[in-house]
Image 1 (spheres, helix red, strand yellow):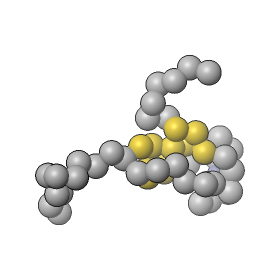
Image 2 (cartoon, protein in one colour):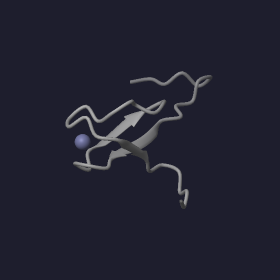
Image 3 (cartoon, helix red, strand yellow):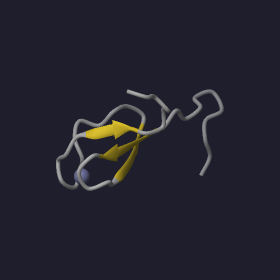
Image 4 (tube, protein in one colour):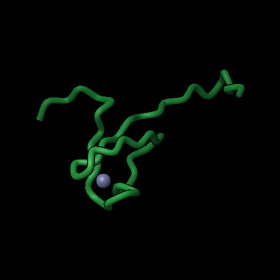
Length: 48
Ligand SMILES: [Zn+2]
């Protein structure tokens, strides 16, 4: 379990709007892997 110090992980967290499942990814997944719903980036506190 070693991380490359030159490539810090910039993992974002996405939450499914339908089932609420959270998925960590380095880029936005297309859809929820569980229900196929739309994902929302919850790692960035953006208001509308
Ligand atoms: Zn889902």
